[in-house]
Each structure stands twice: as C-alpha cells, then as structure tokens.
Length: 159
Image 1 (cartoon, helix red, strand yellow):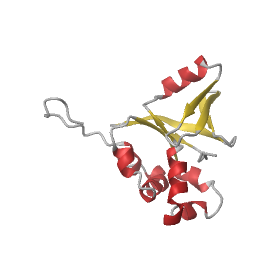
Image 2: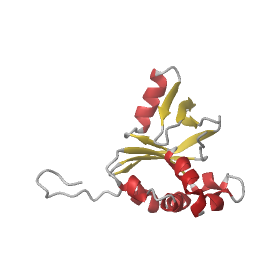
Image 3: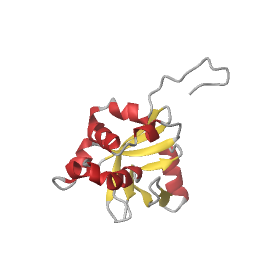
Image 4: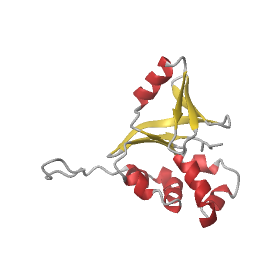
C-alpha cells in the first residue's frame, strides 16, 4: 500500500503470503492457487478468511481434495473457498460482539454469496454452514496487510 506521498510501502504480507508462510495452511494455499484466487486474496480487501487447516481438509472424504484440485472442478473449488471469506476485516472481538448483540447468533454473507452462522460454544466461535455442518475457530486474529485470518478445524460447504 502506498501512501499519498509515495514514500512508504507496506511490507506486511497479504493473506496469501501469511498462509503460505504457515505449514498448517499448505493445502489451502494449493487450493487457492488451483482456483486462481491468489490475485483476489492479494488485492486490497480487506477480507476476513476463515482458513481451514490441513487437518480440516484431511477430515473430508478420501479423494475429495485431489478431485477438487483438478481443472474441471475449478468452479466448485472457487465456490468452496470463497464461502470461507467475508468482505471486511472482522477481528475475533468484533465477531464475538456481533454474536452477543444478535442474541447468540450472527449471520454473515460470504464472498461466495451464501450465508454462514456464527455462534459461541463456551469461549470458541463456531461457524455453521448452510448444510448444518459446524467448524470451530481454533486460532484468531492472524493479521495480514489486507485483512485477517481465523483458522478453523473443519471445511465448511456452501449449498
């Protein structure tokens, strides 16, 4: 990001750069590349990404990830990945405040266009997808130059 006098450039990595620098997100980074979303997630944003860890991808049925990485599955993969992204930067405190303000559940529209429901289970934020599957946020507020990443333990799926 360049300021008005063009002398300062932000050196903070983007969401993709942060994810690429963490071995727990190697499957996600591979998927983002296969879906041609690198440029999007390197753009100004800001974005909030609920990033599935490698263990989250490993919970999917055998062969699912390899099938999704094939060129003919690009549209499906793109839909799944953009379902994990919100426009705007929502830190953990913002998410918790929104849940509490809305009687324990906060619905958000993803970049994919679907809805996710955020709620609390004890101290953990839980994301429920449109199919009723739940994922727990296991790491919060990983900062990037164009948003924030929250790691989740299960891949969520759009309708």
